[in-house]
Image (cartoon, rainbow, N blue to C red; front, side, top):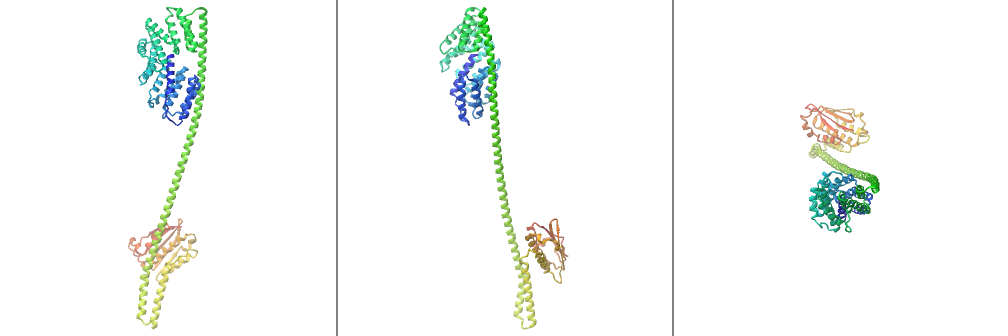
Length: 569
């Protein structure tokens, strides 16, 4: 088992020196924290290393920076593994699995599968251990990494007592020398392979080959800088001679214990003491037994302290992480609120701009419409005045001039007729002037309307007015008063010119805050409504609509004419 841990640690050392990290948002801080964590890792300060690597893990976005993230979680997994917390180690290594596909270099995948395989081996989950080691072997990595994965697979076969299968693989590995660029690594690897091969031969009953392998491995490990696993060689030899040479077995067990004490490996010391207990008697047995019990109790106590310490580290990190997540959530919420506020401001500006644009459009549209209607009204008025001057005055003026040129004006009768003609022309001109003069819209407005209506009375025409004095004319807008005046004027001019009426009725009343005016006469009327606009009323409808009013031509016939209109006050 020691081989597994040492091999992974050596690979991790190489990975830390050669890993190339991409640029990320927190590149400088990730690099700084990773360097700090590596120092803690190399100096065996596991608690500090885990704490800092967790900070690196939080800063990394595994989707954009998978290398730094995978490196951090695998280092955490190894640290948990070194402290025999295989469940936590498995959990950390598993976090790297989804992001291995984003890393082109297969050595990161090899590290993850190797860590998981060792965890499963120590957890006696041999099936998954074999699966992970086989995945590591299939990766396109160096021969050295493949040999380490194969050697780890051999350990699982040995745990399953498949010594024959293990021996086949070990013989293949033993034939491959100098597969690493480091001599120390080559020697250590070969010593592990040969020693394990000797153990397989021992279990298969081939004592000669077993002892040969044990001594070859021991020879390598006795060399300077190659003493990794030396206590294991001594223990294997102690077991080998336990039945045939108890004294030699005791000697090797003692050497294993001394070396384990020298390198301060408590696990190796305990396993060596168990061999000494089996190979001693009397006071030595008691001494070694008490020592064994003491070390086991110390190891259990140390493991509890480590687990408690790691629990505190996890708690502190989770607490820091929760606070960081809370701060990030608050920051995100604030950013969202700012974005919403910006969106609301933009929408408000768009709405304001739209409303202002609509108002401007309506203003210019209504202004142009009003100008057009005003111009149309002026044009219509000019045409009407021109027609009146032509139809009503031009002929009279021509006849009067002809009368004056052909008749003797010294004659009193002719003179009187000329004066009457001139008076008639004057009165006609004055009426036309009144029809198109400015309208008084102040307190004299009711009187002006009555005078205009009375001006159309004659001995042959009677005009009845109902409800006129009930209207509060001072509360009506000036523009509406002018339009009402002109509409009534149009109606009476049309009556006098076309209807030949003898009786006219006009009524005023307030209905639902609207002024309603009903005009009717007993004239000749019209045949159909299509002729209404051709009978001097072409301006009536357009004028009423300009003040949001409605007009209704009654059921007219040849015996009378009726029209009603309303507009809001």
